[in-house]
Length: 527
Image 1: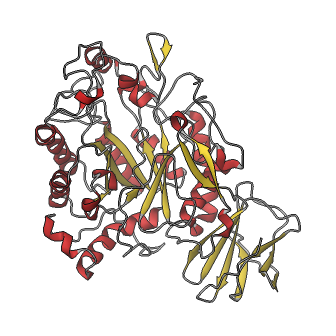
Image 2 (image 1 turned 90 degrees about the vertical axis):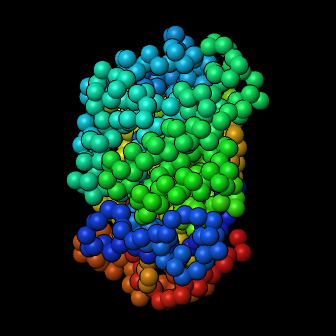
Image 3 (image 1 turned 60 degrees about the vertical axis):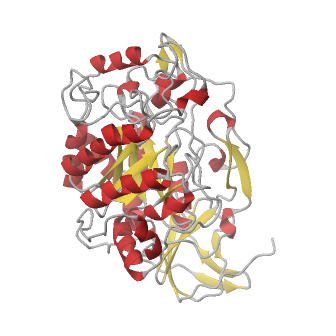
């Protein structure tokens, strides 16, 4: 993670085939499909867009298009300093404290000797994800510090061999996810590894002393191919061999990933697990994005309107990816004026780590993303003891309770046929003052299934009637979750259909389920 906004330059042509394919609600959960995929070679480039290629990708994407909501877990030995070094806060995210704090490798590696998360419980993690209504989990197998959070025979710098804990949390999480039908995915930093002398962006081993950051031009003078063959690829093989079906390999920071290197890693994945999805942060080369299945948008950033293809936004629940023990204020921290999305929904990095997104903001962001065609990957940073912060658990479970009632309008749901509900784009700020644009409209959203519209109402109209701006006939309108399925009053006007709302709104979002004829014909407003 950490500030890579690759969405604009990656995967301009992710195939849309299968984006509407979904596991039926009563279909048994089977994890990852078993369709065979040819070995990835450059000959596949000419197959892009053919029925065979589209069918294979559609099969891989089935679970992803159904899931819509996942849990990201940023955890490692960085949770011990938790944003501080030698008693002083380190600017930046705790996940990158080694680099941001200019901590020599020899000093940072000593953290492994202290890592003993005695309260870690994989079942508790997976249960929290299930209670939250999440359908998949993305676990950090190795982040940029190079420390493997799984048992690896490739390098002793791993959670089993280098710590007194002597456990493999990924294996335990695999079992816990399997019990609950959660899809297990893994994050792997394929080029940046601050522990390895041949990996990119290692400022401690290319002409600088242990306490001196070398000039940036030296960072990339490395033998990346040597690193990939010696460490990255062997560890990827371990992950794909020892932990059951992997739903997605979530790559990051693809600096130096040429077309040839990208194909090499994709070949490894397709040989061992043909149905594992690849995200677009595998490569930074536009001509090689045909290798990937899912577009990863920028950290804490999403589209302001409907977006094509299979895509995902990853975001933080407070202001950090990894656990920070104490609130900290930075001079560059900014916010923008505007609605709830201006601070809570897309903004990422901390200036007060106790500033958690509200359940309503999380709900709005989830619905917003689904209505634009994407998935929401929401992050939690466990403590050094191995626990999810209680605040995170409480927020996630409140949204999960809403999803138990309204999940029909989220899981496997498609894009809005409208778009005016997004409002005009507006600016907000995320990490280090980086400016992104978000949707200003926050009153309502629409998700869809064949013959169905789901209107998610976040702000109740003053007259108690929700306008649905279309001429298409509504044959039935009910409040989703109403056990009596009591029909709501409908009135057709020049501006569309008005639906009389129930007296008591849901504190997160009231959802209307509308049976409609196809196709939906929107009515554009002059306002």
